[in-house]
Image (tube, rainbow, N blue to C red; front, top):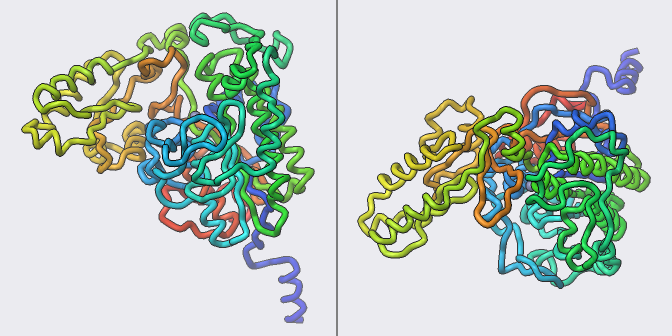
Length: 523
Ligand SMILES: [Zn+2]
């Protein structure tokens, strides 16, 4: 009797934790550059493809954040599969992201790139340690979008440069045959003279299509005609919705050529889709163009996932969908919507004046720099050796910055820890700036204002520690997840620890994120 009960208990798995779900063959991590989660609500009734499927069947975290201050592409991509904030990954801004002249591109002109500044390990390193046969393919329109989700691992990492997908010397000495064949089709070049029309009937779009502040005041209404010059079209292809389908087609080609997920090990496919960012910058988050881009993204993701499911079976794929940051509307739009103080803020003249004074007192030097809301001073010691009281200079710069219209607050990083960390702004800066990185001050704009970068046209921007820029989608999809909408605040650093738990992996270092146990079928 006793033994048959035991047998029954074993059969029904009573009294013990349910066994973990069998491992997937493929982990797919999709990052949509600049995708704001409120787009899902705005366009929900028109979504019927990949986004609709993930929203309906996934574990959807409605309050997910890139919970750091400099909400830019490189820092955002560095948190997703590392489980750590920029303060710990070393990737604290785009301008000191993946640029690396020691790692030139293969076969095309463009800035060299590598993960040389990235510190520590990522999800793929933990996977590889447990399963030496594991492989990763990472694909994006942008170098930073392809490189940073993988960390330092020398895997198959490709991005778009001037009409072709390529990689850098950090990863390889030559492009594999399948990449050369794909590039040989010259798809972007063949789009010369094509037209970007609305996908749905015009009445489906409630946004005005005639805001002259969009796209630098040029070509801001549908239809958008691409140049008849094929080289120009290839160069600008990142800003055309077909770029996302091209990236997905390239990813599928890689999956086939590499036999990803077909050798017994779990493999990683990371795809970062860049066009939403280009369209959002040029036309803003309230435009007809971003609406059409997101509907098109939904459709192209749908057919991409269908093809993956045919290959692997949907039960064998684990999917994450998130974004690297959101975006703040054009100040013109914000002012019309009642945010009267919304403006573009530029402090270059202020900083240049301070540097000129320092040159007079201490001789010429690369003194203060202003990047991504941070006042940087790499030569603090040299300045002090010239008899300059650096602290008093910094205090005076802080006072002058605080007086600039549109600036909300200016802090010394070392002072932030003394503040209330329930303030999102303070918390996000603490997640951002290492105390030894030469950051003297951090400046935060008032809500709805944006930095105006010299020599860059007036575009919609992100990069602030505001919810507009930090709020992102986070959806987990797969048979090991519990579908539903989750309202608690979570962060993109929670993704890597959650994937590690799902695959039984041990992260190689302390993480900033937590396991999202509430969404796990067997927590
Ligand atoms: Zn981005």
